[in-house]
Image (cartoon, rainbow, N blue to C red; front, side, top):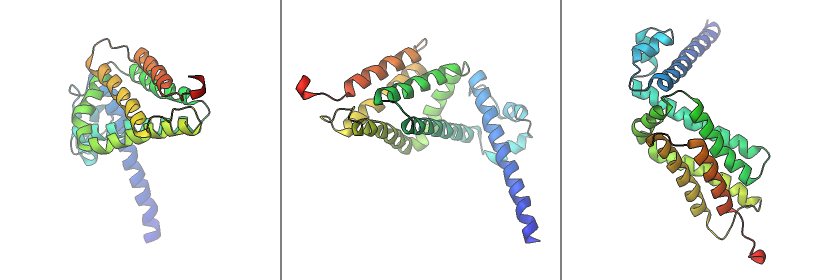
Length: 208
């Protein structure tokens, strides 16, 4: 009896996880196309083909769903950067890829993506701001450390300062995009990455 109950529980849990993922995917599409504030829980439930009450079995409120989407967004970024670090390419190539890929991805999404990211920053991230910021800094620190180990990044400036410069540029770029209409995100991302790579490049004393 117990042996037969376990697979049934596993199937039930899988269905629950599938429903949760469907809610998240549907909500993100609606938020990006219609806007976070303009999208209701009822619209999410209808589009996800679930009962209205089922939504609340997974998320106590729309804000909790937003927080999970924000978490997923950061995790995807961390995974993308980890994959870049494992692959070929110079420090400059990797830094440009991180900035440019993120910018292109953001611009390619729905017309209300800026509003969604703004909602994440102002409503979702504050609850986990300290841990999220530390994770972002660790991500960029790892990228800079790779450059130092490869002999491509300068060592006359401490690692913490180099990390701070890269992280601060990233935040400034996306804040500009969220708050300034017509902000050329991809153009700025490419220019910022090139400038950072040049500024962080190892100096050769013999050639100075």
